[in-house]
Amino acid sequence: MLKQIGVNFFASVTVTLGLPLSTAGDNLRAPALNAAYFSSPNSANWFIYAVGIDPVTATTVRLYAVPFAVGRNLVAGPASTATSTTLSGGAGNSSPLTEFLNSGTDRLFHVVRSGTGRMSVYNITAAPPAVQVRSLLGAGLSGGAIIVDNVSTQLQASSIYFAPVNVTPPSATKLTQAALQ
Image (cartoon, rainbow, N blue to C red; front, side, top):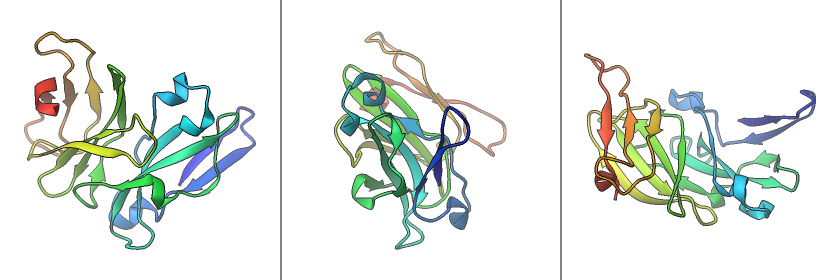
């Protein structure tokens, strides 16, 4: 469930994202707004992306694009699977979503800890559903927070960092732009 609380703290809008993630042993992580939410005057371009369980299969993890109406209010009701994408890796603990705009391309990064772990990169520049552009599989890819360092054409710049969870000894992973293309 995604809930938008009004500025007066009394009014709210609720969007149901399929089944509760707790049915798959997960919890809702931080959703992410697309870049158009901040830059476009057209409400048809504004979306917040969040993870939920498909209500039909009860096991498929989906990335939902939830629209806004004029006034930047969420469109209430159940989220549509028509504007969602099946996430790679199936059910498992997921990272908070990280949105990053680079050279006109709006990307969304997501990690799901399922088996060995999987990081996926989605293009969310156009209208939903999101288009997966890259998927990386590996033991170090598990549901920690993701940080993008900057936008640059210099070597070792435009990298992303994340820390695997439940890994001993603790470590951090760095992926350079070349590994993401």
